[in-house]
Length: 347
Image 1: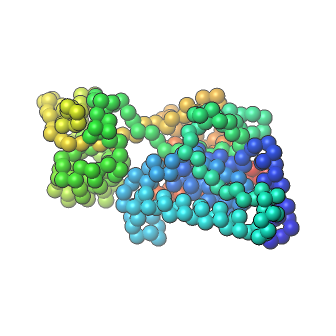
Image 2: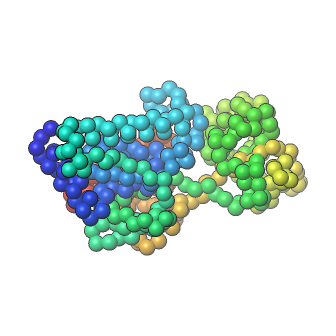
């Protein structure tokens, strides 16, 4: 270990402690955010990085079995997130152990804190303040950061189906992978399109007696390999072109069925559960005090370095309109993390 390394580490920690400023805040603790944190650590382990979000409530954690990550034959989404969290914890421990074994010296230098921390709080507001950014949590806590990476997932689209609020958690769920196994041997319905719905249907087919997919368009718009698997599944049936405004979840205390209109005819399907796999546009309400550029589709605009139109704020992953393939999410996060550190180092 060099003298310069020790000095820089001590100085960075001291200054952060003095003014309460965190070097890098990452909003979103899914695959994109975690990759950004690992990239930042690899570029400069002296920096303090804090992520906000719940790692197990993310796109990757809810994917079920993933078999398209280079070098990994197959892994369950939530297990993959667990592995990454373990890797981050290992980095934290390695960083702490890289200093003198003298407990007194470590206490004086205040170097025992983790370099990468994860908080499950939500950020409600981001403001610019001189050279840094001020972030406010939903609990009212104020955090200052030199740079920010926006890497959170798209929210579930709620309120599109009649009966949602009444039957949520009473047979209605927004995650087929999370809750599908609870309805083993039952008849279920999944509402949605894109790969989100396809993954959900492929997961449900393993547990449920019958799976009906209610698709609002003329095609599911999914990967061909997913379509082939669905077509070979005898217990999966897809209904296309269903007007969601005419869909209603029905039941007594729990879900017992779903009403919809098909080819001009009103129908009712008996099911024990309904899974809604519809994604909304990015929730950018925390950025309302910033003049940040958004495209016509509602996604954040970035350049090749993942920089937004506000210096010091980076964005990566699905909130920029990228598809949710694991390799893409990792690459997006890694690029944002490296360039955010470059920005901090230049400051």
